[in-house]
Length: 111
Image 1 (cartoon, rainbow, N blue to C red):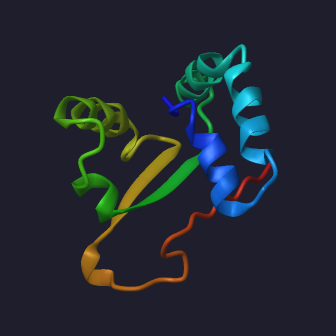
Image 2: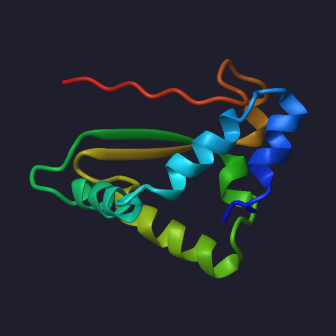
């Protein structure tokens, strides 16, 4: 949850003339935020399943976000997808070092 005074502070810090405040109000009015999260999960279990290939940095497995119970649940959700008929999930180890997408992400979508 975003603290209600954060958008005002961000606008002041960045001199954005109320932009963060307007965005915050739009986000608060979102009527279906959970609907789309449930829909994404359902798509992964659809028949036929979508082809999905993911490379995770080792960091996302080691940095605890939300507590151990949340991490356990997230990993349990990924486990059936690791080497499924249409999915591959790989982990890029720390030993790989720097790479072109360090600090970013890449999403390729094809039909």
